[in-house]
Length: 536
Image 1 (tube, rainbow, N blue to C red):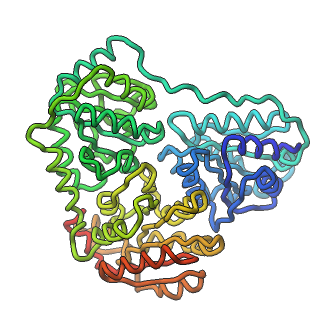
Image 2: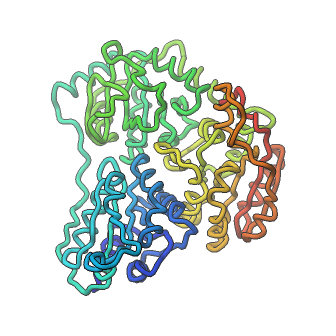
Image 3: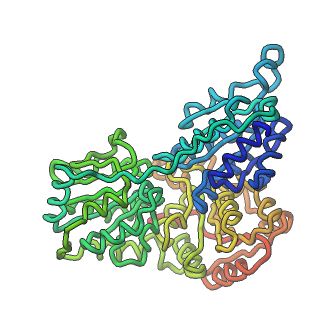
């Protein structure tokens, strides 16, 4: 077998079924090996977009995403998405071809040390050798998936990819059993404080999603009457129509204006898989563990200093919650009903009940979609509104860039999700600025016949930056587009359809028709560039 075949075989055995990227001469052996191993290669139009497509497959399958880039300019196009994977806890395996070491001594064209570029961004970097390709593959998968998940880079010299070699040792360790706290003083103290609490509050984050802790969180909250706040990447870990789900926090200032006072009233805060990389500066040291009991369950030791805790468990979220609740019985909590009042306010905030505007668009599309739909959303003002208004009923059903906040992610995330889970309805929400960054990927939607509605918030401006610019009393510069775009012509050129809408009824009709289409549909929602004033 070739070293490339062994690498591909081990990735297939890890559950990988898709790879995304743009090939070059230096990776043709790798591409051939991936396809022969049963890993389908999807041709994207840019490596950065390909990385987001790969991320979406992880969300749907649980296997690491694979990005394939050629030497030099190819893989360097993916620096942003690899950094995004580090910030957003994505097990992305980026693979590149490189010039052979011996060649580098007398040859300089496209010679670049990829590993030095990616080492600061990745959990691990490897240079594949003919002596141990399988071992490198196994270690890459293990590093990518271990808590917290993150990116790994594999550099493959051209001659190594084609080298004949043995399969080597199988280092594929069985998945370790989830760690849970042992009996002891910390567990006893945590249970005692839970028993005494009358205004408990849980904040769940993306670690809990990675742990698959949704059922345990729901059991815990129901049995002990604990209201639940989530981060945006944890939306849907308990269905958002559940009476104990207050809402999501840390992106919308108007939402935080009522959520943070609720947190301040709690006499016990339970941080369930709460990774504060999503949170804005206003959530730094929001509580004082000397005044409020804070029980933390995290995937990694707390070294980020965004918050402190009274008791901290580095353990599996769901298993720890089950251990904490053993022998405890529920009592009446929050006698004045503050969480329910905040929940009601959030349901009507951010323009969700307006006749038209960003909030109305998000709410209308959600109502037009089936309960199990997957949505993706780009960075920008519309994301702040949508992440608050759009209801999720299962985890990983609203995909976005939260740690790095990369623009241009919604469309490729939707492509990857639809390819990995073709029976699910998938919709992408993007601003007109974000769409222009990845316009070429409309052809990827058409190439693979993916019937994805693409909702465009069309305000002809970088609205969030323009809003900040005005807030700083600066002049308008560099944020407005000179004119509108002929979206109908764009959609037709790329093989899709287009509808321009200005009210809820037309939007509902457009989404319904788009879900039944054989190709993508641009649904252009025209709004005023100042639609976000007083909403965010």
